[in-house]
Image (cartoon, rainbow, N blue to C red; front, side):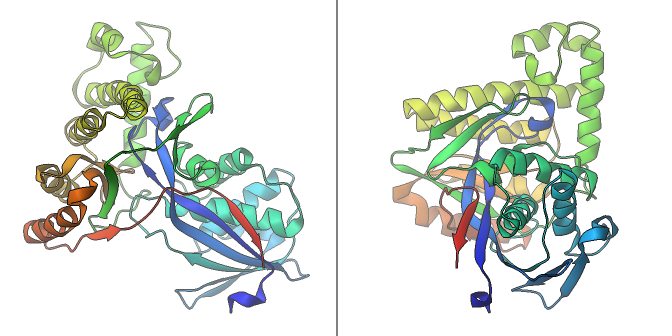
Length: 372
C-alpha cells in the first residue's frame, strides 16, 4: 500500500524536558523531538482534491482544495485541512494529492501528535508541489492552524520542536524571539523514560485556554508595577517584589511561570555540566509547581510521578505536556531502568486501575523527506 506513493514525509512528536506552560508567556523551553512520528505518504494526483486515508482507521476523506475552510468539524480531517489552509493562505502552491497518514505518536499522550500531524501535512504538501521547506515557517503556520482552525490557543513549542528537532539534542527555544540553541543531550549513566498514564486528555475541552487567560490577567496587573512584555521577563526576585498586586489563583499561575523559567535556565546549566542529580531535582520541583500552583496534573499524573520519584534509580520525574493526562518524563540511572519501568507501572496500576504504557523513544530529527 505504501509503495504507491512518491514521497515519505514525516515530523516528530516531542517531549518537553522542562519549561511547562511558559511558552505562551514568552519563556524559554527545553523540548526534544522524538522517534515517535507522524508519517505522510504522498503523491500528486492531478486533481484539485486532497484524498486522505489512514493506516489505522478505515475512514477515507476527500478535501476540496478550494474549500479548505469547510472541514473544521470533520473528525480526523480538521488538522490536515487547517494545516493545508494556512499553507495556502501563506501564498504557497498546493496540488491535488493522495495522502496516507501513519502516526506512531500516541493520541492524547501529551507528546504532540497534533503538532506532528500539522507539520508533516504542510511538509508533504510542500514536497508534492515543489515548494521550499523552511522548518521555522512551517512550524509557525502549523501553530496558526491549531490556534485558528481547531481552537487550541497553543504556544509555539510543540510545532517548533516537531519541525526543527535535531537528533540527540534538546532545543533551548526562546518562545518570544524564536532564538534557539541546540543543547547536546549527554545524560551520562542516565536515560530518559517516558510513561503514559493512559488517562486521555483533550486540550480543547480542558482548562488549557483558562490557564492562558489567567496568565494574561496576571501580566496586565503586573504591568501596573513594572514595564514588562511578558511574564517570562520577570526574575523570581522581581516577582517577589511586585507580585503583591496579584492574589489567589492568578498569583499562583504567574508564580509558576516565573519560577519555571528559572528552572529551565538552571536545567540547561546542569545538562552542560553533566550534573544529573541537579537536573533530576529540577524535574521534581517542576512537577510540584505544576501540581500545586498551576493545577494541571490530576490524580493519575501525580500518582505516576510520585511512584517514579520513589524508585531508587530515579533522579527526577515530572509531567510533560499540557497536563490533564498524558505522560511523565523521568531521569533514571541506566542500571536500574528495567526495574524502574516494572515497579512504577505495577504500583501505578495498583493505585489507579490504569495500565501505564512505557515508550522506548530516542531523540530524533524534526522534518524528514524521503523519495520513494
